[in-house]
Image 1 (cartoon, rainbow, N blue to C red):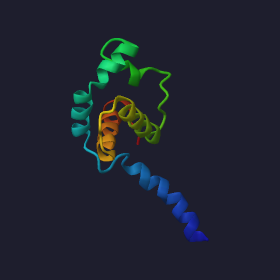
Image 2 (cartoon, rainbow, N blue to C red; image 1 turned 90 degrees about the vertical axis):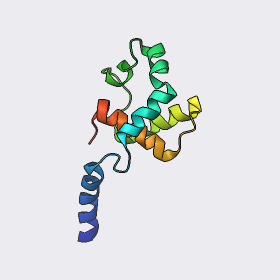
Image 3 (cartoon, helix red, strand yellow; image 1 turned 180 degrees about the vertical axis):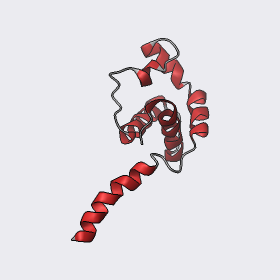
Image 4 (cartoon, helix red, strand yellow; image 1 turned 135 degrees about the vertical axis):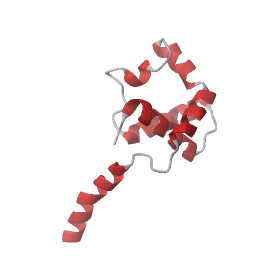
Amino acid sequence: MRIIIAALLVLPLLAAAETFPKADPAAGRKLADAAKCAKCHSARFGGDGSAMYTRPDHRVKTAGQLLAQVRMCNTQLNTGWFPEEEEQVAAYLNRDYYKFK
């Protein structure tokens, strides 16, 4: 029982160590730029589109939600990204905007 309790206490800390440990944020930025994500975002929010990430009432509150949002955009825009590419885009957005731990 103690081992289970210890594992339950340690696992969240390990998961928080790196939000997207295998993803390359630089590659994610290139993917996002190529998909013209900012064009869609600027149409909805004005400016360069980054207001979507920095507005005080943004819907994304966790790294998991960020990845889910990237996946939803991938599906809607039919970008054809593989799951590891979605993680790269999420890693880029996290590094530059969200700062989830």
